[in-house]
Figure 1 (cartoon, helix red, strand yellow):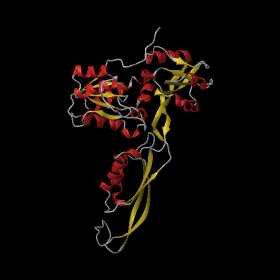
Figure 2 (cartoon, helix red, strand yellow):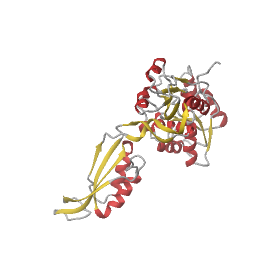
Figure 3 (cartoon, one colour):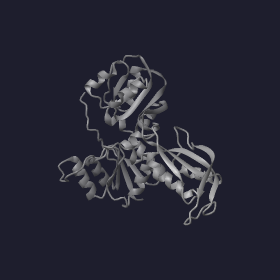
Amino acid sequence: MKVKDIVNIIEEFAPPALQEGWDNSGLLVGNPSDEVKSALITLDVTEAVIDDAVKNGDDIIIAHHPLIFGGLKRLNGKSDAERAIMKAIKNEVAIYAAHTSIDVVQNGVSWRMAEKLGLTNIKTLSPQKGLLKKLVTFVPENDIAKVREAIFEAGAGTIGNYNSCSYNIEGQGTFNAGDNTKPYVGEKGKLHFEKEIRFETVFPTYLQGKVIAALLDVHPYEEVAYDIYPIENKHPQIGLGVIGNLPDAKDAKHFLTQLKNTFGCKAIRHTNIHKPMVSRIALLGGSGSSFLNNAIAAGVDVFVTADFKYHQFFDAENKIIIADIGHYESEQFTKELFYEIVTNKFSKFAVRLSEVNTNPINYLF
């Protein structure tokens, strides 16, 4: 097993192209071609986590939060991050992080939170725009099936929970093959009319190279005509946060108690409980205060996230209950996601969850 094998399987689930511009997901330390025998999964990478990996002989650390965010000007051990990087390099421990890339994908961080609470009818809270394109190409009637199948296998044609979506129109194409051509049909120097199918489908932008490669690989024409259009549709399965329903309406205070127990919170900061019963819940792992208006607009009863500032609690205005459960607490089950992603593909590869508590926040009771 090589580092790149682990990286590839994680990035199939959470493509790095989906990360925010300020983020630094990816392989932070290590050579993609290095051999690995075991992995350690953690939420944060600290010097103590590196020590844990070295002690156990783990070759790669898989983390949610990147150890390196900005550019490093020097490595002299003056901070925990610098010492961790130096120790990882010295002991040949690779470090990979999937941060906002795994936040925004379907079945990512917020979806796992919803699963823990038993929510149903889960949808994305804030679907992203600018992630979809439309492909239009023209294929001879007899070849449309294999072209369509190849493009779908490359990842195109998914709309919400439907796959293999396309639109097909019968028509007639024309071309005149020049002297230096090898036409699939027709004759050189003679205008040819061919029954063709205009095939249209959508695909996520980060799969464009793969989709076009599949098209060119199976299309019978020497010169393949195709168009790519950016579209303004929001991607229904990619975005931050989720909305879901409790199986049955629940007493608001009882729900907050359930939250506290499920996520192991020492305390929950919340706004006024202005309604006795709640049923529709929004969740966003990590810092989600900037999405309060999305949750209000969605008509949810409770918005569960972390890192609200004092004055932001006033913005609830008795329209919604804010439940700030803590950053670490909201994202802790991301470790389970990584474990499942890796072990479902490589069932015999040694993977373990770090027992080092990396939560920097403590409470005095």
